[in-house]
Amino acid sequence: VYALVGLTGLLFAVIVFTITIGSVDIPSSAYFGILASKLPFLHIAPSWPETFGVIILDVRLPRILMAGLVGAALAVAGATYQGLFRNPLADPYLLGVAAGAGLGATIGFLIPFSLPWMIFGAVPFFAFIGGLGAVAVVYSLARVNSTLPAPTLILAGVALGAFLSSITSYLMTVSGEALHGIIFWLLGGLSLTEWAEVWIVLPSVLAGIIVIWLYARPLNVMQLDEEQAQQLGINVEKVKLILLGAATLITSVAVGFTGLIGFVGIIIPHAVRLIWGPDHRFLLPLSVMVGAIFLILADTTAHTLLQPTEIPVGVITAFCGAPFFLYLLRKKRKFTFF
Figure (cartoon, helix red, strand yellow):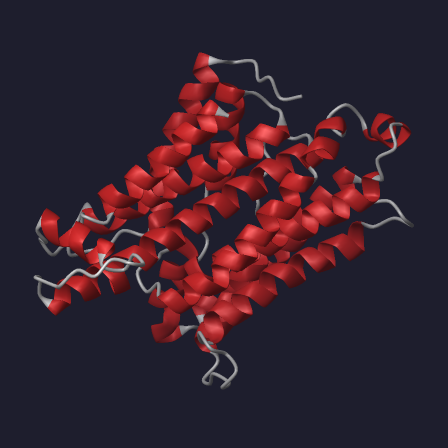
């Protein structure tokens, strides 16, 4: 509990800190005045240029919040997959979400039209549909009668992911001028985030996280053995279906708007598990906070390190995550996973 409270405070501190970082130098008094002016029952006369308010409220703040939501979603989804499959190498993209979303986004870049009901354009829509569709196909292929064997599910995900990735590679070779946009999307980025996208992602991610957390106790029991969990009164197949559905939903929503941001879903659950233990009742909410903090800091680094050039945030997460993961392995060679 103390860790959760501390991380929540740290998350707010990181948000306040990162909102002050950018290419435009804004006085610190203006930051607090602009943010305080949006609080209820406070009437603060603006003493700052209107452009400062636009930069803080319409450019930096939605981007920071989106980074936090996506980081939380990927971290929780990774913890869920690792718990379900009892595999420390599992991540949110294990069952083909990345390959399906990548293919969908590539198609979105290449089609010459966008239908009126595609509010945010064709790319997020097709990426979301591709991610969900890939997992649905994997699930239908791996299902045996009324059971869902984990090894079969993983193998089906790997096979379908390779197949969809090959199609994406072919489309990239014939994409012409759209190639740069496709590559940048595949590496992940939050540069074009708007409030409307935040309001779409926020309820979806919160709902998915709440559903997953409600099944934290059954997920703990399933770490022993599926047969033992069944004997203890847990409907294992139902729990699998609900958790896979919720984790896939939040992952698909996240990557639909931000692209494929790697390493968050594997490194954050490991770090939290090694520090605070494997109990999913605490592992899941702590992963939410750590994942949000990590991706906010990574995205801030991505758009400030080489100004005015922006680095894809997926490059930063891999660059930071891989050495940290190796450090954890070196420091504690034997994982306490179950």
